[in-house]
Image 1: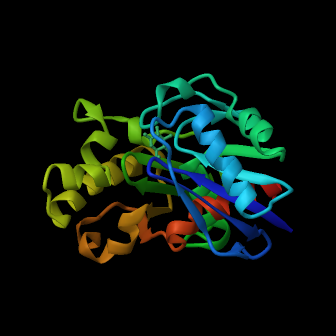
Image 2 (image 1 turned 180 degrees about the vertical axis):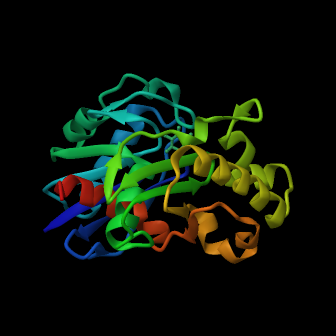
Length: 244
Ligand code: BGC
């Protein structure tokens, strides 16, 4: 079965058809810059362009970088505030003429890593964190997702954890990889103490640089980099839409 996976991010909106049996892309990814301001209407128009690019007719799985409950966008930490309260799932279905499943971006990455990536075949509790502009999170138990965890917004040192340890903060504050790794370690140890996971998966662009900071990470649970890299959102969204 093939599903069009789409990953809505702050800088780009990417998509590709996915074979959901294998978790592989069956055509090259296509990326369109996220419109600014990224209002619901402007983003929906870009998603419709992606659908037209692939001449797609069929189910779509789509990520969004915020809490999404039953299709409705509930938060806007790093997205245009006009999204709050919008039924994004219906909006995108109307814009594309296709059935759409909309879910949180990190949840999609977690589903993909559990099914095809770094957490595949790992029983027990897995926490995936994506480090980018913010920190996204996915919590899985034996491969089942608890949706919309927002560990990036746990209060940490008097502020959101994502304001302390997101990948963006490393650059903004000029931290070395080691200094930033120490901050990530603090977040992992905190989550370790309250969730006792078996495995942490470090996702986002920094997963490719894992060697630069991994020696600083010492939670009780195992820690591994994400395996699917750029494609985790697309694959996970497609997989979620397949209902598998
Ligand atoms: C949002 C999450 C999102 C994460 C990564 C956070 O600021 O609250 O919903 O998963 O950023 O995009």
